[in-house]
Length: 314
Picture 1 (cartoon, rainbow, N blue to C red):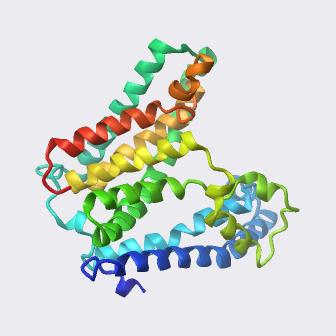
Picture 2 (picture 1 turned 90 degrees about the horizontal axis):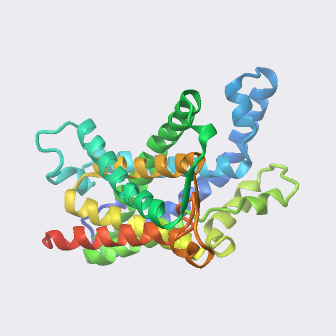
């Protein structure tokens, strides 16, 4: 199947193979996650340590979520090695006389600037206070170290999949602007995974078919846990990153921005308390950021700005 996933084939072939690839990723996760789960539990029982105890406490649906990434990452590596990832082949406007690290840092800075707009608006238009107990050196190091580690891993994996594979396949089947919009929809959809409450409502016994149970709810999770404001924020984020990669050709730059978004989301609510007036909460949100439409509006404005700045490729 990977051999067929070429971005130079007739329009809808790559798109159809993308669907098959995702179906295979779910099937792979359904089969392998019970095995990995029980191996971790066994390891934790015979040789307990901090690492395996931490892993053993994870819910089974977390194992499934991690395992479904493996076929997608393997596909991306194969596509890069065979030269089928155009975004890495074309001239990267941010790689002129710049190292990959400097491009990543530029992405982080741009992501931080976007998040700063949200902070400024909330500061002036909400009841904005800081959590005094959180601002001590030890706690700040703990918060940001955990956030940065998660951000780097998740940001890299999600950009590899959504901009490195999904958007590429969509681009081969549709016009660029359509591909960007569809890519943003896919990005938002795939963040609605199996609701934890559904797994917790079962006896939580992991058997050979538990993976297929989770696969079903992962595939249709958006219908069980749909939140309109969250969906629109995710869509706007996918839209902005899609426009940016078409403009810059830099997956690394997008990874940097995505990483900064995650650092911000994971640390902001621990450091600040934001309370909006009730009738504006849908717009300004709170400490969780994504419970208001403000991020979607800001990212939407920047998407239009980047789109119109140099209307050459899109």
